[in-house]
Image (tube, rainbow, N blue to C red; front, side, top):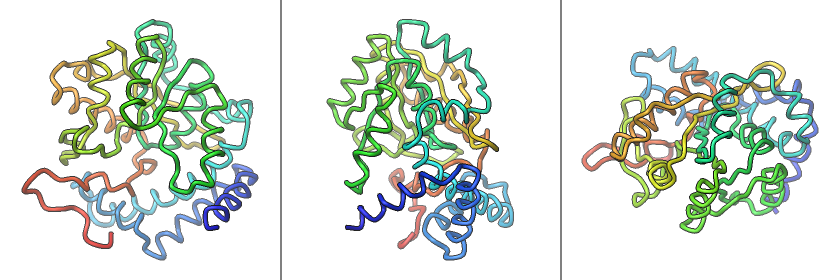
Amino acid sequence: MKSQVVLIILRMVAWIPLGIARPLGSLTGRAIRWFNLRSYRVAKINLALCYPTLNSDEVETLSRERMAQLGQAFFETPKLWRKNDQWLDSKIVAVDGQEHLQAALANDRGTILLIPHQGNWEVIGLWVGKQTSMTSLYEPPKMAALENWVKSARQRTGATLVPTNVRGVAALLKALRRGETTAILPDQQPPPSSGDFSPIFGVPAQTMTLVHNLIQKSGSQVLSCAALRVPGGWHLHFLPVVDAIYSDNQQVSLDALNHEVENIVALAPSQYQWEYKRFRARPEGFPKIYPNGC
């Protein structure tokens, strides 16, 4: 029943014009701060940890900006799921680095797109999916009622969604060997068996080894990218990565992967998903970051 109510609300939100949805999202972000919800508390912890040179007032300001961006993402994402490709194209205000994307798609080695949780990552998948055969890992939403809507939206451009298990990873590798494109969210905490610690913003973080393994087995090239929220729509960025990400040394490659996430975050720090508990896993002997109840 709860999931059905949420679905109805999201479908209603999807009809709100973007120019109204975003201000409503900012108000929602303000409510998150007023009620001191978990997202706000976690964001402040992460920002203070990752930007140690900021004073408490600066951390507070950036946390407030982040909550406004979080609210805007909530209001605009259902619209992305409802609208067609023509509408999305009309909302792409600018594209930086498109030459890097076109060069990557033109070769037959396959392309790995790194899409950190920055701006609105749904936009990248939908926009690039129109231009190339793309395979992405997919984990169904916790609310089952949302699955058909979310899945059909992500597949409408022809993208292939595969499960987040061994079969799914095998499908990614096969796609890359066919010269196709895969999209990966590189800043999620993996299971211990699928990751190792690497610093991001100077803080040890359990980091996925998936990208490193795919590179080594496929010889594919990598781009990092983001769709940043700007007036009127989104500004897309496609960035070449440092050579170290291709290293056969896993630790060197993981460090480079997190460096790429840092570069994307630097484009617009308030648009990064700071409310995610990125540092839940800690190296042995390190104190935990998040207090109980946070």
